[in-house]
Length: 175
Image 1 (cartoon, rainbow, N blue to C red):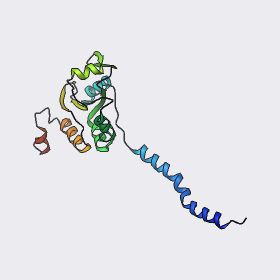
Image 2: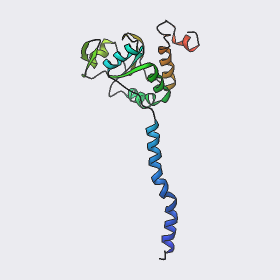
Image 3: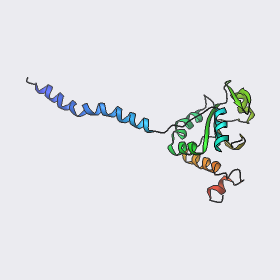
Image 4: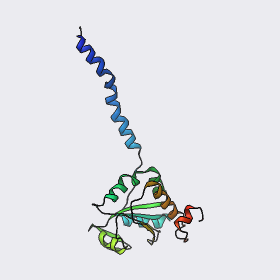
């Protein structure tokens, strides 16, 4: 079989791409599968686990319309160092402050909205850090970049906040 000059040129042009088109999706899927993901749990389960494991609770209070809440999920909560610190020392919960979903908090059933009000949440996102007894030991009401988030998490998990060490003093190594 004889190929025309045009067919030969076309075959030569397309040959370099043939293997690449098949290999790229597989490489992309492997990267996606290798990325760690944050493990969110129910509030009731998180409190039980925190009591049993002597870990802290981390609660991300958000709303569906909040742009900075979405950025927190897309950037900070996708960061490997943030995920590692949360997995190591915290039980992580997301709470929609405008939801009427029923949650159980310390044996009482209430809406997520009522619990956010009970905790005094006024802006979004609000990050709450609770000890294993469910007492708020710290909060941060703003978007936070991954690097600062890791510092906040280690500040809480080290117990410095409960020892009344300021965040600035902690960062300076005065804990």
